[in-house]
Image (cartoon, rainbow, N blue to C red; front, top):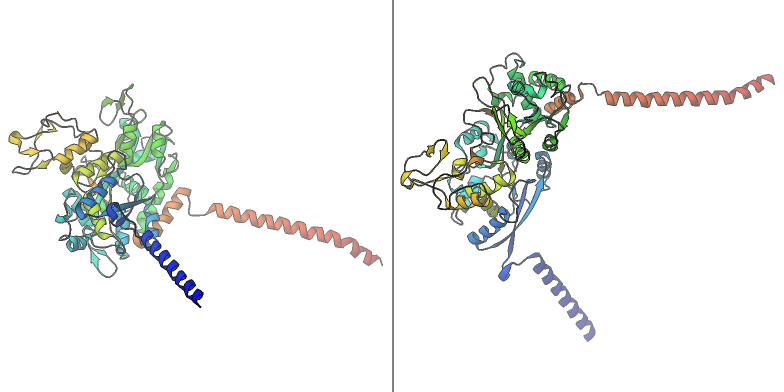
Length: 525
């Protein structure tokens, strides 16, 4: 009997020890025995400074510890398309994710499906718990006002499942840019550039560019380009000629889709093909000479095309420089850039387990100095207003001083460089400032209009196509193949049926021949 009690006691002890070990294993401990929290970030590939020297993820972990007193581990995963990301979120396969960085139309779709938490409400909930920097003044406080107005115009009343809301409450802009043409200055002429969006159709008739053009294998990007081309060349359907660009690129009426299908089908005769990510490499290797590109990718390729041993004449600037590639967004008759301006922004899913860490991450990345690190590291344009990444205003008034086109200190120190911003610029090797921190600074990265469209640009933001998405995709697939008729399927069916008839004919002929002697023999009897 005693042995039975001993065995039972031993079993209880073993189970207790194993349970305790399981609990201790699940509850990770940091330095000093403190619990380590987890933040799961789901972002685009190559879309944040992950360098060993200036990693913004490592910097945030330190910042989070300083603000909350708690240790944090960041689990950073990536996606390659908005569709991949949305499929996971809408199928409830991403319930452990705390933070996502989708594009504008994907944010709209996630809002419409009631999957996002209001960042404005979360800030109000936590503002007495932790200090916020830019988020304390709203989700758009660090964003250029013209860009904010464009977001408000397009996304002010979005269905959020059971109500409507403004995207400005659910998203904080991260990166932005345009779509235009990356081109090789050695082969593209002034006449080619003058053809505007028509350059993607080789409208100038250049023998050099024929079949040396790439376009994106993306219905949204190619549709925007097609609409701009039709607008430029008077090919829009009747009644659509005076429609604003923002409405045109979002219009998926049957008439517009049919017209777009026509010009995109015709485009096939002049291009090399379709690409998603290899276009910039083909441009650098001079396999093709023009590519429909996103501005961030284009600027990266331009930097890579620098050749210190050669000077190239650039037909856009009319000058010689060491860059073989350049980027161009076609202008209208008034000299304004036309087309699509896109943005990606941080959102927090309703099911996010660590919403506070997600908020602080957004707040941290939107600090000007961190925006500098991220923007320069990946080559894309931060949505943080460029002035805030250059100077902090500490005097009276409201304008930055320009002397001969350069930003400089105003007399009496009315303007001063933000210390953290200055350090970020030095680390990025983009600030060529004198040792005494006075005088002129090199802000060429932020003053490049290829990265930062002017406020007068006629650029539209694309929305989710909604129920018309399938129609747009069908149009695009038909345009790529050149017809509505699925000839590949038809010829395959003909081959199968033909093969079946041949086999049947052979089979019945063979059997007939086998039966014939017996029949003849029977008749002879």
